[in-house]
Length: 400
Image 1 (tube, rainbow, N blue to C red):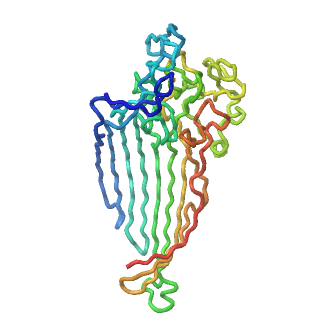
Image 2: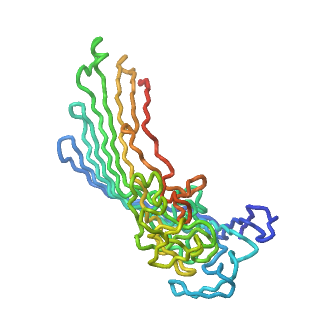
Image 3: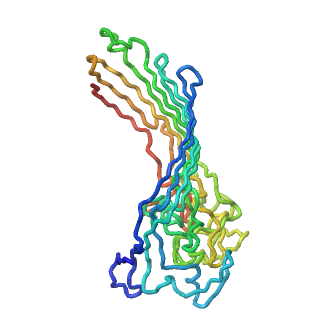
């Protein structure tokens, strides 16, 4: 076994705060398998319909795990309980299985991924100056982790599955929608070359000819994210020492369709969205129990429940869907013919032409707004910001 300490051993208890471990069989190259089947058919003159199935499977993907833990060990020493799987768990009265270490980060090839997609497109070749393409994709991306260890690169942050696993003894609990899973996407793009004075003969032809209008319209449903409890002993529902747990599904279910203003301001300002809210043990002095609501400040949303003692939460990974996206880009080009081989192109381009507000996911990564922390402030569910607003640019391009 190869091990190295990523922090000074000046720590007295535990002796090493973070230890990286590569098991004796080492790391292997991940495997990606691709599947494809498609048909094409000309449904009208110069109009082509294409339907494709695209699939991929990933195996032996990189993953890091916190190995210095087991469910139940953080309970008081000698205390026993039975979890929802019928396992008898015994407390050791400490956070880490081996008290001489804290986080023991094990690198391994354990993650898997699945992708299935239906892609439909209609393409029309140039007729009287018009070229267009319409595209629709239905897809589903599933994996056992979209990040690779403690959650610095995913919007989910340290949430179980994208940070360390929810339960190291049951990795299958983290199989769910990928953070980047987009279920539906529709797009339409076109290019229209104005026919008048296209040959650009004479002064009038060079001034009024050679114009081209381009456009793109796109809509897609939101990506996925995970609410989780992030800090304090009350957030370690399964008592394994890692505070990244998902709660139980409460009375409100495992998803909520937020409005535009709720993405902007947070879902539960003053806990008013549902008229009541949920509180885990030790939060705000209230002990939550299934089916009850707490109106105390700081309580959790009503559709989250507190798992039984040392149990894994029943809320699945990435069951919540983020804000959708709509965008249109428009541009006007003026092609100026200099010689048979040399052309200038003046470009006037407007990105997000309607200045539509598209929100980002709530973000629990380093530097994020932590709005997927169910133990956080009233900004739960708030977008981390807006995707680019309207942008206008001018350009001159030389083609030869």
